[in-house]
Amino acid sequence: MGSTYQAIGRNLARLGSARFAARSRAALGLGLGISSALLLTLGCHASVSASANQRSKAEAEEGPDFDKPISADALASKAPPAIALTDTALLGARHDMTLVSEHANAACACLKAGIGSAQSAAFQWQGPTPHLNDDIQLAFAMTVESMACNNEPKGSSGASYWGYRISGNDVIIFVEGVRLGRPRTTAAIIPKPVGDGKVYVAPAKPKFPYGRSLDGKSERCEIGNAATKRTTPFTTGELGDTLLKDTNAAPSVDAEE
View 1 (cartoon, rainbow, N blue to C red):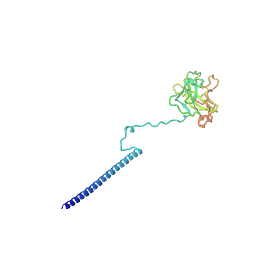
View 2: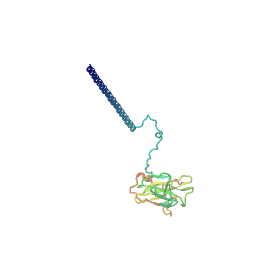
View 3: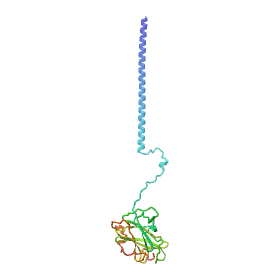
View 4: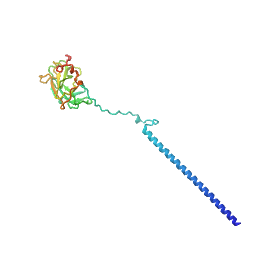
């Protein structure tokens, strides 16, 4: 009898141990499953976050997000980039330059005159200094400051630039008188003489005193030339009306001027 009860007890103990082991294995399997699922979930979440970050970065590089409101800084107007202006000045009269009298190259009848580059100390510009082609162009200006003028036409306010002509390798600047109340032109951009050629000033009409030599012995007053000589011939565009007129004749102007 005792042996039977002991056998039954041992069987029950083995059965209990087997059930406990089975339950333990089930619990362990469940725990491992949950842990694996949790790790998989966390991994997926990290992957999704990384992908989202990559997309955001890519979108930022591709262009602005139009779903976001525009900031005040983005709406503020921006100044356009500065553009360097290097266009060469055209030949002819200028109204934005005056001659600094003490830097004049020559004194002629009724005027002083000077030539040089646009940056020369002889000139004072009212605005930005223009760009000249220093190989073939010169700036010219004159003033009547402190200059006596004999035989000046009645009602004239002084010498005024009329224009220029080409004579051989020389450039001749013609000067006229202008009536009181009318604007005077006292500066111009002219061609540079070729080689050893010179710049001269001459009256635009034979009876005018402006631009003759200071001693009155010559109808022209020599201004000179730049230190750096021109090596290229005059172009057709520089000749003006020289082709149509006698280069040694004064131009025809209104006698009352």
